[in-house]
Length: 51
Image (cartoon, rainbow, N blue to C red; front, side, top):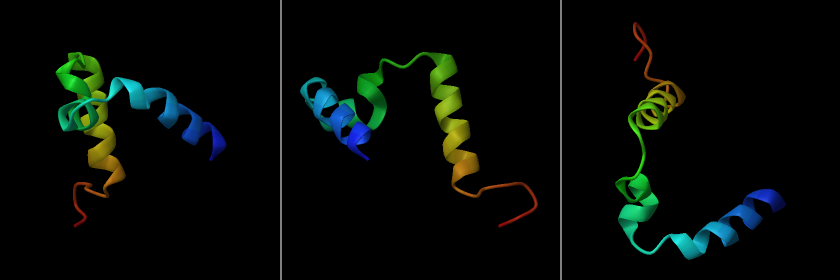
């Protein structure tokens, strides 16, 4: 928990707009964007055959 708070305090100076927070300022590459989308998909419980 402390590490997460430390990272957030450090990263706070780089986040200026909501776009920076939500989509990393649109600076993510294709591989990282795909990995993030896949993690959101599977972490959200959206699996084939189950709803």
